[in-house]
Every structure is written in C-alpha cells, then in structure tokens.
Image (cartoon, rainbow, N blue to C red; front, side):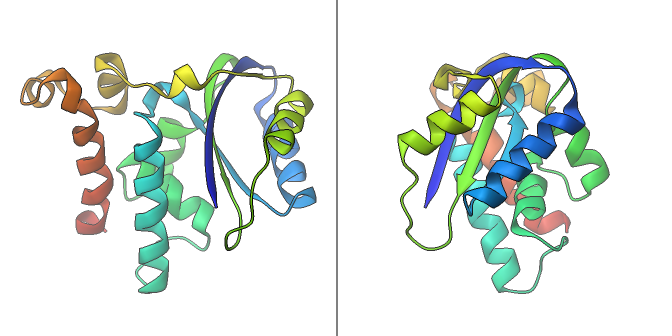
Length: 170
C-alpha cells in the first residue's frame, strides 16, 4: 500500500532527521522516503515515480539497488543520484516535506501510525504542501516556455512527462 502525506516543520540536522526516519521505518516495517515538497507536484507525481521504479526493478533495468533510491531517481526526472538528491532531498531549516510510506503487499497504513511518525519527528501534517503550482514547476527545472504549452489545470502533466523520461535517458 502507498500513502503520501505532506508535513511542515523545522529540520535542524539532516543526518539526525534521516536517521529518525530510517529508525521509524525499520520499527514499523515500512519503506519511508522524504522529499522536498517544493518540487513535488501532487500525489500522482510520487505514485508515478513508484510505479516506474517498480517496473524498472521487475525488468532488471534499475540503476540503483533499492526501490527507495530508484523512486528518488524517477521522482527527480534525473538519471543520476548525484543530481536527484540535491534536487529532491529535504533541506535544513523550515521545510515543506512530502513523505512516501510504502508497505509490502496490501498492508494498511493507519492514521495512528502516520500521527506517531509525525509526532516523533516533531512535524505537523499539512497535505497542502503536496499541491503544485507554477513555482513548483520552476523549482523542478521546467522552464517558462514549457510551462506555457499547457493550461494551469494540466501543469501536473509536465512533471509526469519528466518522470516517464527517465526510462529513455537511463
């Protein structure tokens, strides 16, 4: 099962934050990936990245050794982790964060687990950070010329194209 949530809060130390995410992930048998929400354009952006990553792994066309890292590549629209991590990774300070929580099979991820996770990280749930706009596209690296090719209500397509393009540039 996939659950995608948005959160806001202060990240004082990225290594400590990522360690806490990893510890919670292991304790609860979840795959958890954190993204800078300022470059995420809705839940479909992450869902598409996960689906592309799973398919690449099934077809043995993956570039990394884990679903987590392969999802990071696809979500970034990049083919190299050295480009994907700075683009999609969380930043120090006040942050908008998107979390991907993923289970094996169809295990349910309860709101109780989500609430505990956010409380442990001293974050506040805010799914509004998942909503993309023109600034999200620009932060992602999409230029004004590309943005003008579509009406506002179709902006998400530009991100989904970048996710799908990873298959071609690998």
